[in-house]
Image (cartoon, rainbow, N blue to C red):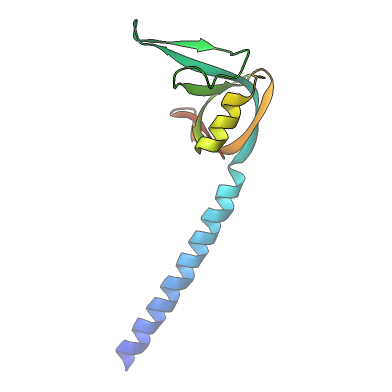
Length: 118
């Protein structure tokens, strides 16, 4: 009987702590959302030379070969990642300068910054 009470107490304590940590991680993840103001740069591949050409497109870029996008602000460069729908909206937008992109920011000064768009 003593062993059963100890096991029950440990299970209750474990469940309580798991809820406490999961709630704090949910609260922390809400703080990671931000709206970034900057210029969207298309990184267009040049397969012949093996280089990447950074371009601020003056029209929607969804007609170009598959490529990556970054947002350049005054002090940071954010790599854009996320769901296809969110990235497609950026590709189809003809305005590329001084725009706002919202999403979840992850990274650091050492590893670089990533903006996950929805």
